[in-house]
Amino acid sequence: MTDTTVNIDQETLNQIKAELMAERDRLLAEMAKITGRSIDDVQHSTKFPEYGDKPDENAQEIDNYSTNLATEKILEDNLRDVSNALQRIEEGKYGTCKYCGNEINPKRLIARPVASACIECKNKLQAAQ
Image (tube, rainbow, N blue to C red; front, side, top):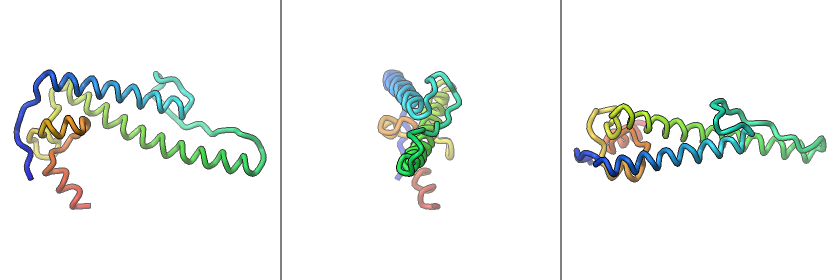
């Protein structure tokens, strides 16, 4: 299956960019909730919760901390993907597969705005794993 080479119209590109910016803001807000830091703080680090000194409270602290660390990692990965997509838009490289250099089908970009690979290359990468 090969993506067709079709250019993205400016209106669609503007819509995708707006969606990516809104997603970036949402991710930053979620990270701020978990880390207790402001949205503008570029360094995030999950804070260890303090519920008390009882064994059940300590267990809950560890459980919540572990969950928050995993959540923060997912948010950071998603934020990286969104930031990279926005950077590709700014550089005029959005919609070009980073592996083969062909254009990514606009339908794929609408469905997954952070996509950096065409369907064919993505399938090859997944088959290799």
